[in-house]
Image (cartoon, rainbow, N blue to C red; front, side, top):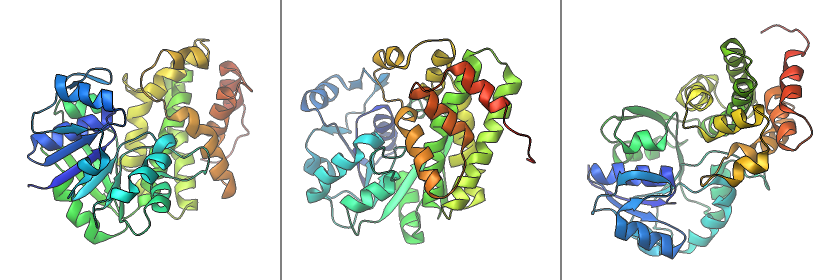
Length: 330
């Protein structure tokens, strides 16, 4: 299928999506905020800092001009980190291409407003149709053409029907869903729970403990999704359980590896200082806890992670506190 797609954000995920969509015959533009970085990627045909070894097809345009990137786009994919999404959405709003839907490709909760990505964009782009592309997807595997699946969530069935053929490509299976809020919550919570799973590994507590933590993480997520009006099927699907398992066990997960480092006694500041990409769970953990509290939902794992990241607790104390919780029915 032909079609014009703008990808806003030249991180690893945005670049991977742009590459695969261009390979599939879409007319794709990739926007990078920094003009020097956009020029470097355009000339070298590689995002060497964040997605090394992946060659950009020459049909893929790279630019720092948002108006140029989005001109006549049939869909705009917003693949910028959640903590910067508010500013980017406001900056590109004046050149938004007509009725093109906004597809949220970032995961997390805005630490300042406690809003999910689609809620943030709805404020900046009133009237624009919203969707989310989310699931258990590592950027380097998508870029390499390895098989994967994702959820395409949008409350409007017509939007889902229009986007599915535009954004799907070989070996990347899309599953439509009307549950935009539930899909977004899954993408936010899994990063936080993955930090806890990494802590368990870093402390050497074993596979049994990690499996138990992941399972209880799904229970936390399900309670939260239902409280927000979402569906339990979403929490048990690709954007919930699927993404959670990948992020809690995959070697390429920044959140999981952060937890391992913290469990081994490294400091948060030292770990983050050595990273190029964003570890979304760090900002999301306290925001997730605060948003859940507004619904009267208890998230013991997320609360423990937030306390660890804030320096109010140690990794060992985090694990002991979770193990010492009162017995209750599953």
